Every structure is written in C-alpha cells, then in structure tokens.
Amino acid sequence: MELLPGLVDTVLSSTHMDAIDALRAFFLLASCTILSVSILPDSLHSRFVPYGARATSAADSASSSPASSNSSSAARALDYVASLTVPHSYFTQFYVTSVFASIFWAVQLLGQGTVFQALSTRISPEHSQKSMSIQQAYLCWMLMLIQGARRLYECNAFSKPSSSKMWFVHWLVGLAFYLAVSIAVWIEGAGALLSHKLDLDDIKVTIAPSLRTFVCMPIFLLASGIQHDCHHFLFSLKKYTLPTHPAFRRIVCPHYTAECVVYLSLALLAAPKGEIVNKTLLSALAFVVINLGTTASNTKQWYLRKFGEDSVRERWNMIPWIY
Image (cartoon, rainbow, N blue to C red; front, side, top):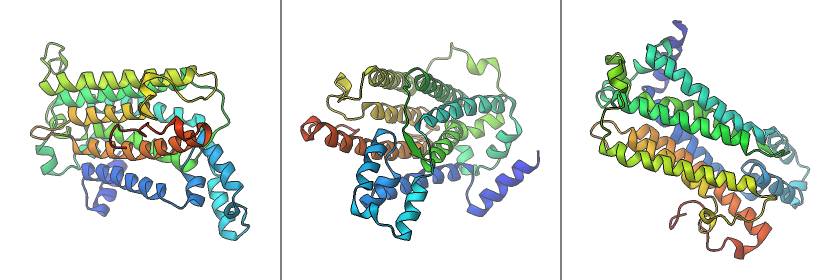
C-alpha cells in the first residue's frame, strides 16, 4: 500500500500544492475551461458544448451550415472528435459514482484508512490548523450521500428512452467532479479527523446544532425538494413542451438554481472555525454555477428556437435578477 502515498506525494510535489490546494485548483481550472469553451465560435460551440435534445438540434443546424459542410481536413477532424460520444443515459453513472465514493470515504474516515491517511497527511499546517469540526465533516459527508442517492433515484425513476448523446469529455469531467467533491466535503476537516478517534459522543443526536447548521440545513432540504419537484414535473410531460410549473415561470432552469443552492449550503455548513465559507466547496460551487449556467443558456436558446422569443423573454436563465 506504499504505492498510493508515493503517488500522492509525486503529484502534489510536482504541482507544489497540498491536497486542499490541489482540489481547489482542479475545480477552478475545470470552471475556467468550461467558461472558455462556452465562448467558442458557433461552429465549434455547436459541436462540443450542447448535449441531449439541445445537442441534436444544434448538430442539425451545424450540419446544414456552410462551415459544417466544408470538407477541409480541419473540419473533418473536428467532426470526428465531436462524434466521440456516449449515451446521454450515462448521466446516471455520475450519481452511482457519487454514492459509491461517499460510502468509500465513510469506511476510510471511520477506520482512518490508507487512502484517507495518504491525503490528510499531505495538508499544510496552515490548512490543518483551520479545521472543520468532526461533526461538520460527518454532517457534510451525510448530506453529500443524500444528494447523490436522491439524484440516482431520480435518474432511474424519471428516465425515458432516448437516443440523445453527450460528448465523452462531458462524461469524464462529470465523473471527475463527483469523485473530487466527495473528498471536498471532508478534506478541510482532516486536521480534526486525524487527531481524534471517532466515538459515539461525536454522533449523538442530542448535540445541539449550531446557528449555522440551524439555518443552512433547511436551505439544503428546501433546495433538494424544489429540485426533486422540478425533475418530477419535467418527467411528467407527455412531450417536451414549455414548462408551466410555478418554479419555471421566471427561471428557465430552476432545477439548476436549486443545485447551486445545494452546494452553497454545503459550502456554508462546512466552513472551518473562524471562516465564513469552506473555500474548497466554494470552488466546487463555482464549477457547478459555470457548468450549469452554460447549459441553462443553451436551454434558453433551444426554447427560443422551438417556442419563439415571447416564450422565455421574461425568464432568467438560472439566477434571478443576475443571469
């Protein structure tokens, strides 16, 4: 088992970062990459960014444009790369990964396993001293498990047969995100977790919640409920029409808004002592906002083409009064 600590040391030393900084850098780099790709010229944007029903319509319009019919080597190469897709149903694998990663880290945290040791001992003293409490770490782990399990249930219960595809890079980035965020929910509590062996007193339900927990837990639950209701409503549509559910009246993608609020509540709940927010989960939130914001923009453009400008003129993409 010496291979894993050595591999972690090699990766972190080559980047001159500890485990927490490396996680933050991953989320921020992925966010910047998505933001950069989202502003590509239309001929490239339509090939690589949209997925699902939006990808189908975008591909059709791209194939009918002069640029797409160009038989140059560059165009053919781009078309080939864009053709490397996986079924849109592979979205389910994101939440399978999330649930299994949460279970894996539960075993590692409870037993202070080798993988936990490999990461938590590669954290700078500065980060270790500003540690989440043990209760915070386990609460956020539990909420991440609940989020992953709920989304996995929805993917199975609310799925319909579809031939839609997504670019394989979307799939790989999604898998990497859920593996990383399963670490992010506890990594800033590594200092407390390393110095204390878990006992029953740490998980007693009689422990009074902090004001932060008292405020943020209902926000997490409310956002989860709204997202579930939106997904159920979209599934109930006989065909894909303009949503009329109350949550969709002012926002094109309220289920994306709810997802952002879920991660915002986690970032606040996981704030180390003396901090307002958990910066690692805040970095994960930045990824979620940019990734879903790009998809929300594509969804609004799809609605404009399919239902006309009046259908979504007064609707925000995802964040009311901002975007």
